[in-house]
Length: 511
Image (cartoon, rainbow, N blue to C red; front, side, top):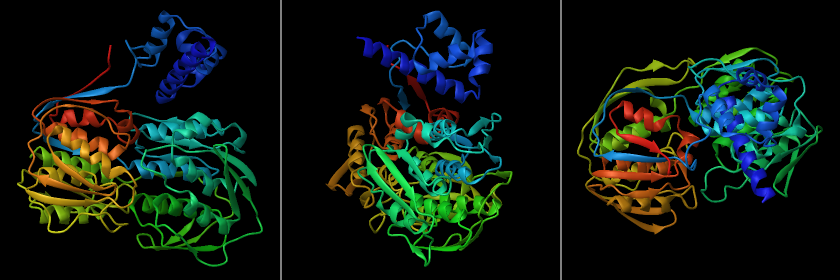
């Protein structure tokens, strides 16, 4: 019984700590609001303090956060359809760029200010990890501008294991940290349930910088041999985004010139390259598969950077408009990373208007405004499969499952990257689609579909979960999507923002 109450108090403590950090308050500031001591707040957040319901309600009011809800279980979404959307919406900044830039801030001994950072669960987890290393992070305003100030020395022995295990991005600490310590440990990472993505490509990318990692008992044990430096081009065995980012960050603090071949040129990698240039690192070949990086022995600058908009969010908004046959304007869409998707949609009969191009706040990424037109779609002539940029984005493939379901004819989707993701597309059948699983990577989708509302438990993978939510928008009657935490990991206020366009999505909890 003792263990149960300890665990329960610990979970409440974590909730309070998360809500406090989300509000940008220190323990001292929260203590002042509640007329108590900082040590009491510290005990509460560690789960070492009994709390009355009255105290919980006061903390909730101070943090503008419902700490106690009746039956405080997972959040579900109730969707009333069918929906027709209208109006305009701005694409938010890239989640994956934000995550990479948080890791890259560890390269800089000066102050890093990032503009309009995606305020999602993955970012919150990384901020907790950074905080445990002694990095001071602060949300500056309602625009989600974020200030990051590192300590003189990182406290690598104090890393927040619980937060680190709840994010897959912590592996991207290897590149920046190998310059900060000769030995260190990182707890194993979690993330989406998409099968085992091996860490070996990261290891082979970082070995030329002297990093050796042994993975044992849930931690990466890292040792750095300073005598080893890259003597020839680093050839990545996998053209992965995070692998490329790790190699870039390692190269940024290596004062020689490093050539990285078979590099990803995807949107978040480009944002990282533009950020490294602002740190004074020379990066040539942005947008190609060969990056040449001339690093610096130390980086100590005050830098201000605005990551670009998220092409995956833009694609989810496009898919929402297509399946609901709606006319909406999607502003600030990064066209360079949507051109192939749009070409394929045009081939399927999609009609839309595209504005002239203009520059993102980073001065480099090209943006447009897209206005969708209600369109009758037909299946494409060929199968749909993702490829590294400039091919169809791997994270955009799932949206074609729900688009294909409303198109006339048969569409073959081949999701070759992830072992198990395609399996989740069959959840669309519960809403009335005809999705046939051919093998763990391929599905055949027969359309058009008249979706009908039902209740579905959220799949454990981010994009398939959003795809089901979009199908529910187009479904007749009431649908329920249960346990939607995975969506909050990757999207900020998605339901609320769809509601602003005319959707009827209501979050609720079981009582």
